[in-house]
Length: 162
Image (tube, rainbow, N blue to C red; front, side, top):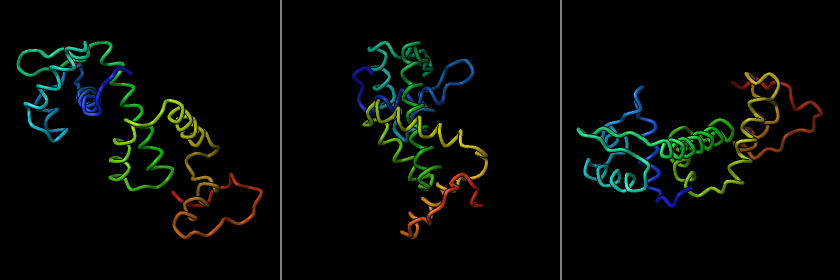
């Protein structure tokens, strides 16, 4: 990834998320989304434009370049995987998982992220994935109570948690 500050990555991701069907976002939308002032967005977009990642058009319209879109998509995908891992697998509440995913996405190594992606995909591919597998139920119970799971040979059974 290019040498981008965490803040620049957040701005790039915000434009990616907010882009409409024509691929455009507005400075005001980015400011509202990130809870910053418009001059901060304009300054950040100037720096991203100098790196060849965005086009800043008249009237505050922002458009990602192909390179910017690719980078923003990678940043956003990292965020989504981390959120899913924290919220759906570790059972962290959504607000905390969102905040932590945003922090982690800037610091996680590609190797660790790759393994997390595989783990999340593995849990998605587990048989009867609409039901929580027993091994994950055991983890959730252990995280709540500290109680070790019973010995069992059938960890793929549903445990009734939705």
